[in-house]
Length: 156
Image 1 (spheres, rainbow, N blue to C red):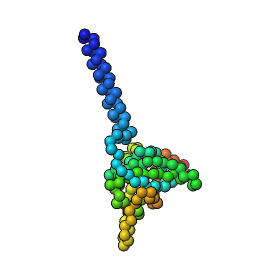
Image 2: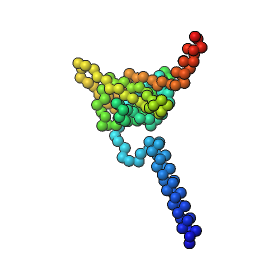
Image 3: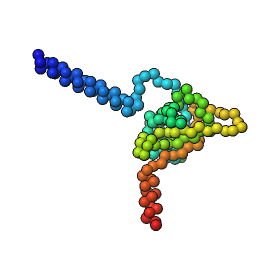
Image 4: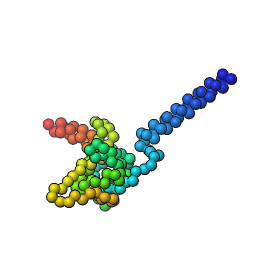
């Protein structure tokens, strides 16, 4: 009887461990089974996306307003096209805004940062579904910066 109690306890402990592992894995992968927020799609074009990945955050003023939905290569000019899903409640982003690929911390994950832009003297037009942000700044790739630094030292 005592052996059976130990077996059941060990089994429950292993099952609990598997549930906790699954929960943490889903959180790390940003998978949420809750009700999805309504989104609209914005397109951007960058020269270099660095380590940006699908599912990365889109932030405005440090607040998460959406996520990266797709990263593709334009077949015509071979530049990366990034599709952003912006939560519908953030529908007041001016069409003069700019997008940059940023890094959280020194070696952290990359995300798309949007800086709100305004045009004085004109009626503000907001981004809507299928709009494009034309003012973009590409990712800084650490390896490229180190290479440029090393090359500049060699010339001196």
